[in-house]
Image 1 (cartoon, chains in turn yellow, purple):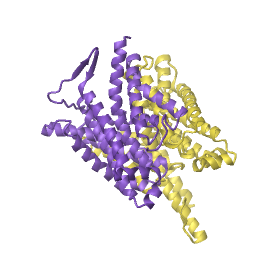
Image 2 (cartoon, helix red, strand yellow):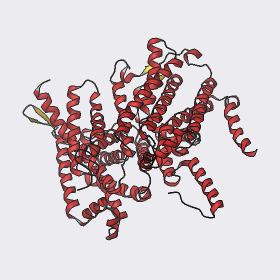
Image 3 (cartoon, rainbow over the protein chains, first blue to last red):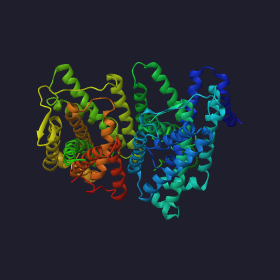
Length: 327
Length: 290
């Protein structure tokens, strides 16, 4: 009873947040938190569950942003449709990257660096293409038509991204309890052992990659419609990839709530530091860097991971009378 | 497309390739000894560039004469980073090691941004003839000096690792950490020296390009990505591979610049990178410090 109440209260708070908070600054903050929850949850599906750390999710994000925007500005297609086209294209790109990297069993740093290289290749390609307006970027004309994925009120954006984020949390929760999730966890812990147990490594990694890529693209389309301007560095740049993975690392890789907790910490903190040190560009990213180092040094499994670990140890301690370190 | 232009870009590529090689040698040294891929290498290079820039701007020190100062400064910064942070990460999962150096990179880059603004800064070496003419080919003098120094420094490092006690200890640690510790090598000290040296090499590379390359907080980004490409190309932990890899990337990028429109040449190193990863993941020349 106490536990359900404890869970229900934050949920209600999240639901009525736009009613409680009328100030556009804080509403924007809420939108950003949910937006990063969604994106980092998408990253979590691939990198958290299967342990294949992608440093190049900007490739998928940018694909989503550009697909829906080009379809809208060039052909008048509603972003509600365009974002699924983007997700489809992005899934194909993800599967292509997966086909190359997983086939050849690139792991760890090799995989991370090759995803980064793929994102850079896409950025340079877009930057050099007339079709994508080169480095100028694309403005999305202001329409404020819900059918065109543009709302007059920020709270509509809030509820839209809330649905996205809620869906992603639900999905990751479900995956964690499915055969796919178990397979991916086995791959993460020990790929060779998983193979010997008959887990199809390649297929499972590909499914995770496709899902992760497609979802990330939806986030890219949302970004485009929220900011109404896209250009190569802000959609395909390395910073995009880093800011997608940061909340998960801080919250807890491979956990259901990690991305939410991580975003709840990093986004307001980033805003706070840029408000405090606004005159010095870069200070808030300095703080990000510092937090990243500290978290990895002292909470290598992130905040949620640390709590889970502690709870597990406590339980094990009560049952056996001994505290065992996890290998 | 004339033969002259191709020859010109070939020469330019070789000259730039030496610098890429120098950045990569630092990366490879660190990887060879600690098995850590250092994302912060580009930021260390950037710090070296600022040391040179400020020595020149504030005290009028000739950029080439400030190289020992930037090398020493970054050696200290590097060993402190190793001692304070990375020494705790030696047995951590690979992705956490990667992320920690990423955090250091974010910190250093944005510290530079906060301290010195995003402005691009230039250093002119007083009294230097900018261009030498070799038949039809023009050679940029600072680039030539950078290349020759990079080559000389690589040879020096090679000699150091082969012939000095510290160098031998570094190689031993790189080959077999526990074995090295068993025969009485203080591996934690060796790690500090190796990381310090890696940082110093990055700083030297930075100071050497200062006269022909702008200094800015994010200048390390392009070099770090190319550094990774070069290192993977040459085989992680392989010095000569890093040098040759640097030349290959330098030349292919430069030829790409002459042949491809716009900034598409930037794509060349990444395409080579992915091709190498897929075809020869151990690099063209195999791994391990030799």
